[in-house]
Every structure is written in C-alpha cells, then in structure tokens.
Image (cartoon, rainbow, N blue to C red; front, side, top):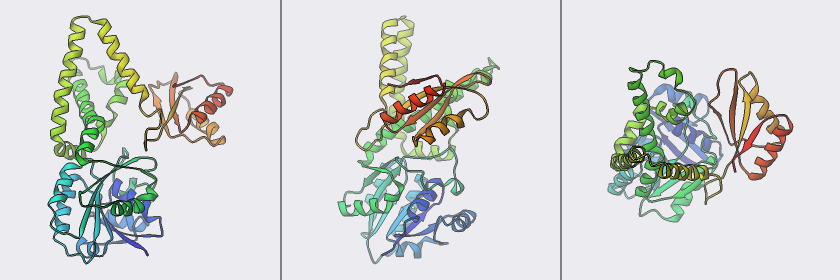
Length: 366
C-alpha cells in the first residue's frame, strides 16, 4: 500500500528528501511551501507528486509528515499540527540541526495521534533552495534520529523504512547529546570561522594587501562562513546555551596558548600542536560504527585545463569511486595539491600505483 508523505518546506533539505523517497513506488509525496514558484518547480520536475496550498487537509491524510523548515518555523508548524484532527497515528519528523528545543515542543503536544521522531540529516550544500535539491544528497551521510519518549521501535523502524532510499547511516541519540556534539563539531566552528573573517577584515584597515594573501589555509578554514546567515542565526539562537559554554571553553583555550607564547614554552607548544595533528589526522580514517571510513591521497597537479579531469578519468577507468575531492592551496601557473578520498585502503593503494605509473607525484595519508 502506497504511503502518503507530506513534506512541509521544499528547500535544499526538504526538496532533496522529497526527491529521494519519492523515487520509491511505495511513497506518494505531497509538497507544501509558502513560495508558489518553489511548488511549481517541484511539480514540474517531479520532485513531488502533488502540491497543497494549506497543510490541514493533506496533513490529516498523511502517514508521515516531514518538516523541512528552519527551527523557528518547524516549532510553529508543530504547534499548528497539534490543533488538527487525525483519525490515525501519524509520524512527524523534522530536519533541524538543533534537537532539544524541538523535542521539548514535541513533549508539550496534546494531540495523542502525533508520534514525533526528531531527525537531522547531516548533509548540505553551498547552494540553497529547491533548484539545488539532489536525491543523492544524503548518501552515506549520518542521519540522526531523536525520538520522543513514547515512540516505540516499530515507529522508528517505520520512519527508517521510508528514509531508506536516502542511503543514510542512521544513529539514534538523545536530543541534548546531539546538540552538544553538533555544537562542538559544527555550530561552534561556524562561529569561529565568522570571527576569523571579521578579524581579517579589521586588520585590512592596517594592511590593505591582506585580501590578496587570504588564500590557501585561510580560505579553507573560513569556507563555512559563506553559508546562509539567516539559517545559521536561527541555529545559534536555539543552541545558544551550548554556544556560550563553548565560547567560555575557547577563551580558556586561547589563554593557555597565549601563556605558552608569553613564556616561550616551546616544549608545551610543540606537544600541543602534535596532539592536535594526531587527533585531526585520525578523524574518519577508520570505520567507527555507522561512520564510514575514508582514505586519502595527495596528488601534485599543475594549474592547467583538464588536470583534475585527467586524474578522475584514470581512477574511473579502474572503477575506483572518489568519495571527496579538494584542491589545496593551488596557485596560478604552479603545482597544486589535489586531495582525493576513496572508500577503502585497497582503493587507496591501487590509486597510488595507478597514478604513480602515469607520472604523478603523490603521497598517501597513513
């Protein structure tokens, strides 16, 4: 029997989820968005099967409702759904990157037919909106679920069954634990990246040449500061308690570093840098639970037309999948470094031998 899925909010995440689960013949996707052009695009490109102008009627018929909206909007829609009448149990889930405020609202719902399972697909893009939606956006990504207390394993499994075509790796966490962890590895780094950009902007008043030097490492470490400001303001607001705690931790960390420099403590500073390198180098290099592993190669290439395509073509001919690709500190007219991530250590070894045999200079990350 075909399941009816209502997706509220057809931006990058909501649209990509609709596209992914809609490809299954088991799901009928109904789309809602306040932007009429978004709805028209989704219908025209068969991302959804039908649209609705109000959520009341479609929500009452849905088996599962996905809230693909920013956190503040998600909370508003949850309260709106709470006022509707359902003649059956309906699973409601969201995509918010902060879970506790949403789960707290879920606990306060009075509609017993609503079974809330928080969700956070940990994938994204530098683009936004329905036109950037991709059915494969969540492939191999971590998809966190934070079910409400009354949700049973069969309910959670029902949601996983609907989301199986995303090809995500599901993890079940407590909402507070999720917010602490994503605060450390996602939200707080965004704050730091924005602060670094502001620092560079202020120093530009003293050294006007700074923008021309701000490449390589600076561009890499501040890339996320280019993300959607309105979206991130919403995230910071709803996770502000964790952010303030992390800022306090950061100030202490910076004071310790400052003391090492003031005292010319070379031993402590060297140890500090080595520990950071060892921890950073170990991230993601071996499979931990549902987290997929990756293995890196660093390839020297010249900044010329077709250089990257030539490397990719060589690996494609041997059916070696590239999980990630990044250009590191490339400069016009000279050799740059292309970092390739492949799924297995066997792929890493085979890629190394293949590229070495074709005249490339490269290094493996052990």
